Image (cartoon, rainbow, N blue to C red; front, top):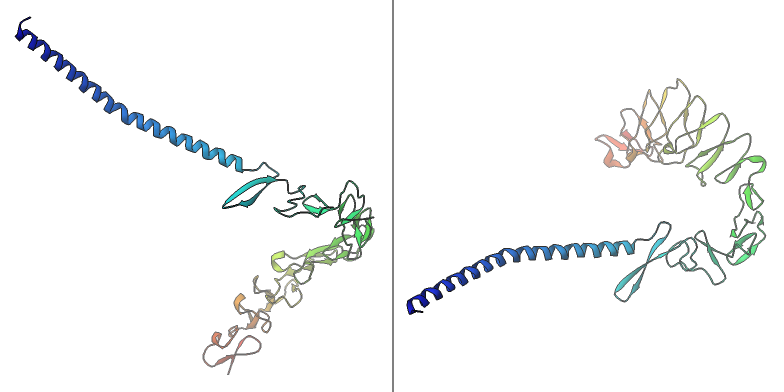
Length: 289
């Protein structure tokens, strides 16, 4: 082969190699970003799957309670049956005494052994008003005229227990009542219960319930049909005489003015509530000097 022919051959091979290298480099340049994106996406999906699995493991089944204990600098979550677990009875970490079991979230004596009621670890017959109960339940005290019947505190003659008393046949209506310590009271069958937002209590049929006065120290106000009085709003409360009184706003109602002042007088808690020439009287109303 002549030298000139050899030179042309080598130049052609070199050009072909250069083109192949360029093509390989181009394909690699296109593939690498795609590969990188694919790897990043795969890592992201893996991380999401790991987090979802962690959340699934931390969530307790329905009916179980999640408790947490501290182990060093970390916190460990675990699931408990707070209704029956003597180590977490009713709440995380509430441990029953050695001789007690957990029943319905309450530490008591063993109901399978005690047919009466339990006072701590002591089993009682459960038949007296002072210690009433059955099947290992916690002993109850029967108050308000109730007796212990079959392990249940019961009012006589089928009466209804209302807060702290049994409603007799003369007063069978049980109503909410903000003026009673028990929050309940018994009323006549012809009475109707006033709304709880009005302080509860009752009024005779055909009358109108007024909200209790804000101070809560006076009895229920019931307006007769055609009355010249009118009810004051909730949180002020009571009733005023329409002809010459006005309701005080809730922030100016006190034990002195009882929620009403004469028309033209300002309700007051102090002198700052009164204008020139008037003073805040003991009645809680601004009176002329």
